[in-house]
Length: 172
Image (cartoon, rainbow, N blue to C red; front, top):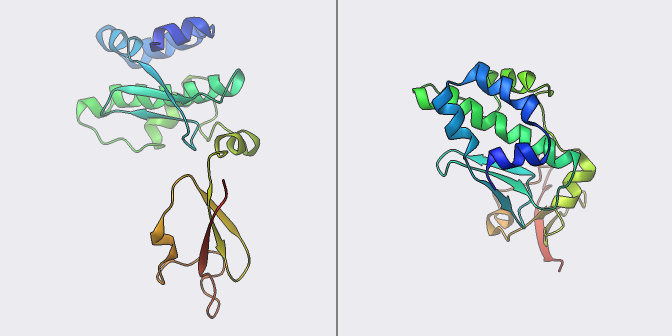
């Protein structure tokens, strides 16, 4: 699927085209409309824009309004890249340029998934690390042995005497 197809499928053409015309020239608009929209499976994030691959990814577990919000969030990254970064400017991921484009899209410039939707994305987090001091659990999709070193401590209690040491367990 391409961005153009996603806009048509979700009835977003009237909302997005004025923003594209305001921020990009005709050649850039055509380039953006034909960027592929991929699916990120088994990833603990809602979506992401990859400027190096020129692809936009949205998590397959999202549907309806959350999907639209994530798609528009990532599209704002895409527009910011085409408007500023390809001209040689440095653009922060959630910097001023991105926030302006989000406001043009009619969205608040912030995270687009709430805690309940984020919990759906973390179903594959099978590697658990528990703080020995406060029993706080950190869940990760992949094993990270660096978290078990003596140098890494849980942020909430790392300044307590002997606190913050993590232990690992696998929860299939």
